[in-house]
Length: 66
Length: 249
Ligand SMILES: [Zn+2]
Image (cartoon, rainbow over all chains, first blue to last red; front, side, top):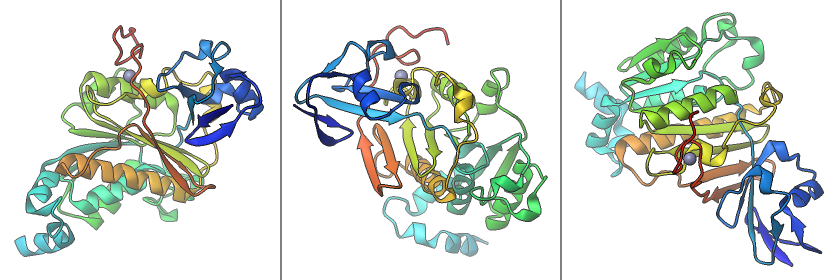
């Protein structure tokens, strides 16, 4: 199964929730926002949303320094 | 005097996107830069150099030695001085033809509306999420274009927010991170702030002169990877600020 994460093709062994995908990449959920298939799901939905073949995921970090 | 002025901007006049007309628009523009630090330094330098006629600088801080790895508007001799004063001095020495307005203050919900009044464009060059959300909320309500950028380490993001036209800051970040203090004082390479401050200045110049198109969505830079990425972030229908049923923020 292939999904596009931040513009790059990524192969997933099995269907994975957004939360678990972030976990597998060592990303602390509180430090990012995500867009799934061009809409922005609530943070509370990340556990429920399962990434499907061909899905598009954008992960953007909180960056507030200056 | 006219000749000298013409000469200062000679390299703008032969650009079809700026020319004499664009230069006059820059001269008439009033731009507020909030934060005279890592992002604010390049923004302010380039706006002053470009001949933006009125530049407001808002900052409540004083220059400290740990600022100097990135805040190139200030020098070692400025340590202990107010950033607005140190900044104004450099900018006027770069370009004495412009006006600098010093706002020696920290933005708060009480003073922000008065601060923003009269400016055509706002540049958010602050270093914390509390200020960023405050600035974005008020710019949206007052319908002032806002150039947002944030940096961390070798990375950064920029988004140009035109109320009513583009996604807003809360479309990207609906709320501040849970532990916003954890983001303060993180490492920043000065050059990363330099890139994003320069991009912010360019967005301002484009907006004023009408050159090109604004950064649609978000531009994300990963300096360690050496790559820029344009993300077409969507407007959130349920955005707490610009959505169909905005919440009372
Ligand atoms: Zn919004």
